[in-house]
Length: 213
Image 1: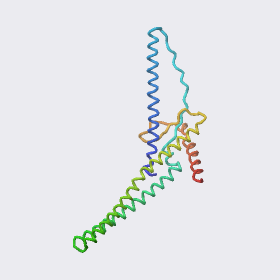
Image 2: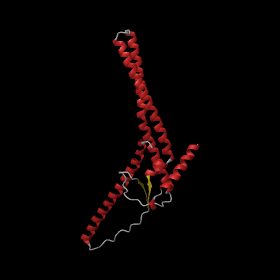
Image 3: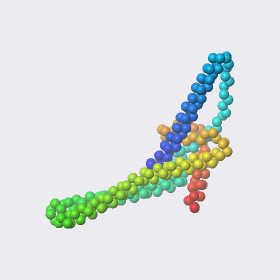
Image 4: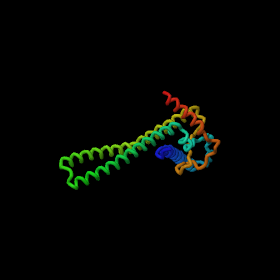
């Protein structure tokens, strides 16, 4: 799979980290607020506050490593991007080498006085045009980066939209993103909480239906 598409994993994992960061510090804020209130009450009356009842949370996760390998949408666009990149690289290398060879031959003729001034000017214009064509190939290759970003955003949206629909009944409180990569905030995940295969089945079914249209 194109290494640029692995950015998709980092984007989703960074979102997970941000969510966990928010949940952690918002809970600390609530705890601090409760402590301050408790201190105020204790100062006036010797009352012991009852602990808050916390409902159990239902948490599952999606394995992003498996998702990136088996999500048909990412597999297809990865092949397309790799093919385009390969084409641009070959074009640039072939055209660049030929341009350099031709320019060296032109310089040799010009230095020997074998070309008139008009011929030199005409050849220089041709080389400038060929150099511009070469630069255009390079710009197209570099533009693939923006295309990859758009693909990553589409994949992320497909995933989040599907999970929202999948969990419409509110069965789960959290659906985490898990990866073996260094950015993963989840250090250990039980296989019993893994819903990746179900999410993949749904995403691939949607993608196949979209391709038929």
